[in-house]
Length: 161
Image (cartoon, rainbow, N blue to C red; front, side, top):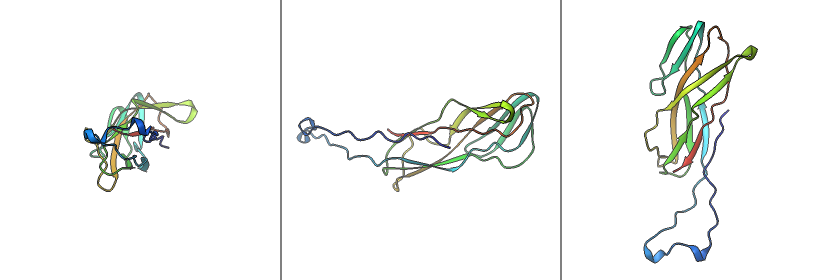
């Protein structure tokens, strides 16, 4: 599940307070609301975790999975998350991912996702068609012998700049 914060709503403006058109200032038209869709969920694949624990990292650009620590790669596919944003054509947006997300597994076990990153440029913009697609990845940290099926939600916030 993806929590999304859209663009702030346009506020009504007093006509007496409107910018002076003769001074060369212009009023920007109301923005198209942002829509965010998850095309693919982030999936770290299958691993076995030993007594020392470790981490699994999925790179958003290459999709490569790397394991560190006492972790054995059991195969399967690791998938970067893929998100599509739609809104006002050409508009600059800001994408915000949390610093950490806790996932829940069976028997009260938890694992933490950290280092969430995207493949976006420093100043992402919606295309001429009003669409922007990006990938994201991160690191899953698992304590020793806490292997299992972990699930959780990674909130993604997208705002107009």
